Image 1 (cartoon, rainbow, N blue to C red):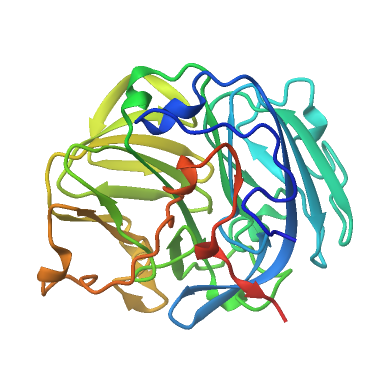
Image 2: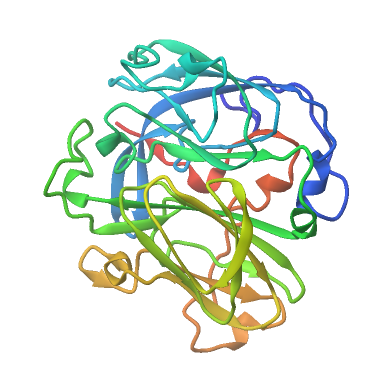
Length: 350
């Protein structure tokens, strides 16, 4: 059903142009984007042997990237192939004149029952780093079963700093309670203690490095997809806190650690000026474990091209099998639309 990275249909492809990642869509006219989703019961591997029953979009967690331009008309057909009801909330969208497409069961629509299809129609506004997620039993479906994905809305007229960006990464943070791993329809209750913590659905060492080179202008989009607070620290650099919840800040500020919570998004701009191999991790220490084992969870590295990784005998990932597009960095370069990602695919639940 998902034979290509656009879903069933995609109207109005726009070719990439210019050196900056944001340049290809800055002058684009509004288009109608037709997208198709299925919701599937999927088994996802978080790390090692730890699997989790998820309700995934097109068989993957995080879900496919939706990348559009401010003002585009978006139509998303959703087919529910699970045994539980679901919706999709388009977190950050104004839904002016389209409130019935906000995706909240019992408020804006009836939930999409098993075997049923629903089509959402809305205008992509405002621009920025947004996301989508289920709004049925969010305690379980979102916080613990992987029903989320990124929604990136390019501005019609990008600010100068966005035109400078040469590398663009999306990081979605979530926590998991292994006691409920194989019990779909349960969990997300008071007293749950998360014991696995992931970036884009994987826990260290199953995460991937961010590969950059000196001189890059790096945009790092942080999305709090779970129900925990996070304190992300990047070693060896200050970054500029550029945007909050998709909106550029009137007064961006430098930092090396950023605190954010559920549903929040922060865009960081990092100027790559210090070649090395640098740790990126959650400074809430309990988020860097896999079950009862330390040195896991929400950790990754930044690798500069100028440093020969394989020559660093002490480096944990010197022989790592690199998986591209783990942070949607390749998908963000493609023409606008929906982009699936094999790196995030699970296997169908039995």
